[in-house]
Each structure stands twice: as structure tokens, then as C-alpha cells.
Amino acid sequence: MSASKDMAISLNRQYVCPEKIRIFHEIGIDLVIGRREGPYLYDLDGKQLIDVHINGGTYNLGHRHPEIVAALKEALEMSLDIGNHHFPSPLRGEVAQMLIRLSPGDMKYCVFAAGGGEAVDIAIKSARHATKRRKIVSIDKGYHGRTGLSGAAGNAKTAAFFLSDRPEEFIAVPFNDVAAMNEALEKQDAAAVILETIPATLGFPLPENGYLAAVKAMCEQTGTLYIADEVQTGLARSGKFWAVEKFDVIPDIIVTAKGFSGGMYPVAAVILSGKAGAWLTEDGFAHVSTFGGSEIGCYVAKKVLEIVSRPEILDHVCRISAYLADGLKMLQEKHNFLVEVRQCGLIAGLKFAGEMGAVLMSKALYDNGVWAMFSGYDLSVLQFKPYLFIDRPLVDTLMERLDAAIRACAS
View 1 (tube, one colour):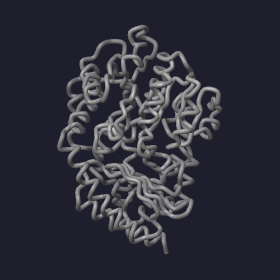
View 2 (cartoon, rainbow, N blue to C red):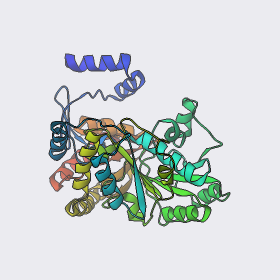
View 3 (cartoon, rainbow, N blue to C red):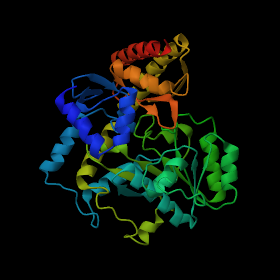
């Protein structure tokens, strides 16, 4: 291990995240990222890794996409800075208009944030104001961030860890369980249902046929708003601009973050229907965010939206995801250790045998030059999310390395 890498690990172990450093070290992954480009990460020691974790979708376009780097440089050369959240911004207005035009249904407003957790907080506050109700329904072991309201809407154990669990206000039901959702909503006292379209940290289980549409119908019947958390699944990853569009559901609120930043500058957004965003016409100071919708962030996000809305991008995702599906199917037929493939576009969860199967695979893939993360709430499922521009040769390389890693684990 190089001196610079050893120093980085030591400083982070001492001052930043000692427990996380310990866990990864015990797994055998002592990664400190140095150079990065496109689909590749390079350890400070020089090891190259194909990145199929992409930090939850943050690197949807790959690392340091040339057009995003150029946009960030242009923003700085234009003398832009964070801006002032109290006053109109031409860039903020343009990006809001783009998001609304790219979203299904009758969206009216856009509120900006600095990250996904804050954006989910805004979504929940908007739903509560619109409905004058407090209860929020989510799925068991869902993930919506780790701030106040977003953390309470996620995994109950994590919320309780910080004394932020509020069982009287936040309830969770199993994913794909229509009856449980109906029971949670039938009293007509819920402000919103918040759902990741395909729950990432749970291992990307796919919505069963008709499930999301049934939830939306229940929301309409009970006066409950539907919040689509598209932080990890949106921006063309599914083959549609928003993954929820693949399931013919029109939400009342959409949350986007991570990839919205191009992986270069923090920015997030909440897209609101007229009802959900009515508070903006009543009290313009009800929510403020110094860094939300910063002008540099909006300049970068504008370029991101231009790229991912190009028709050829969606066509490419549909074609290459079919090719990826063929490769994964062949591996599943070849190896009993690969139990299940859950895939929607370039969103995939690979379930392996054993409770810790994905942890073993994460290490084996790391040894074979691939970085893929196990799912936090199901350690048997590996998150497998290539960037949007992956081509057939790179898919072939990934299948070869995945094959070698499975053989190593299965033996």
C-alpha cells in the first residue's frame, strides 16, 4: 500500500468514518479512489476498476463526462457562484421549466435542494401542507436519505438509532403487498405514500404487475399524494426518462438528485403538482435553502437534462440493456450461485446464494477489477448499475469478470 493511500485511510479512520473503514477492511476492500474517468475508477495504488455501483446513480453519465466538465468550467468562467436563493435566477427558472416539461402529468412547480435527503424532506412537507395530514406511508426497508423526515420515512432501525423514529407519523408496509398498503391508507389519514420506483437498498426488487398502479389508485381514492423517489432510478436509467413511466403511473411529486448533478456539483430537485406545490403561492419563505438550486449547480444540471433527454440516449439504453440481460441470463443458467436477476433497463440487482452472497461477490469482483456494492438491507443482492454509455465490448468484459468472480465464490 502506498504511503498516500495509507495516510488517507488513517485520517478517515481517525476523523471521518471509523466504523465504515473497519467494515470494508474486514471484507478486504481498502479502496481509496484516485483518478477517475468514464466507467472507470483507479485506486491510488493504480488498480483499475469498472464502476457498476456509480454511487447510487450519481455517475449516471460516467465519471467526469466531458460535456459536464465543460459546463462546470463555463459556469465558473461566466462569473457564476452559488447565487442567492431569495431572488429570481434565469438558470433556476430554465431548469425548472425543463424538469416540468420532461415529467408526466400536470406538474406546476419545482423546488431545489442541495441533496436527495433535503429534497425528500421538501416533498414530505409539501404533501403534509397540501393534505393537512401528518402520516407518511413508505415500504419496509426503503431508503429515502438520512436527514430528518427522509430518515424517518426510511428504515426504522436506522431512524431509531438517531432517536428519529416516529411510529405515530411514519409507517412502513412490505413492498409489493397491495393488501398491506390498502390497510395503511383506508383510514384516509395519510398525507403521502413515498416509494422508490425500484427500491435500491432493498436490492432492486421489481414492482409486480399492477402494483404501482394499484397504489396510485388507492392514493386517489383516499386523498393521499403519491411521491415517486426517482433519485436512483430516474434520468433515463430504466429506458424511460423517469422509471415510474414504465409502470404507467403519474405521481403528484417526483424527487431527483444524485445523477442530476452529473457527478460534478451538488443539486437536487422536487417536482410538484399544482396541489402539492400550492404552498409556494401562500408563503414564499416557508422553505429556504441557501445551496438549493445554486446557479453553478443549475448550469451543470441543465447540461445533464440536455444529455439524458436526447432520443438516442433512451434508444441506446433499451438496446444495450437487452444485450446485458442476455449476458446475465447466460450466467444465471451456468451458475447456481446466481439465484435471481432483477433488471429494468440499466438498473439491476443480482441475488446470490447465502445471506452474505453479495458481500462475497463484492470482494471477488473487486479482485477482478469491478466495483459493485452489496445492498444495505439485503446482503445477498448485489447492486449492478452500469453507466448509460456502456457498449457491447464493455458488457462482454463485465460478463467475463462476473463469471470469474462467481466461480471464485462458488468454489
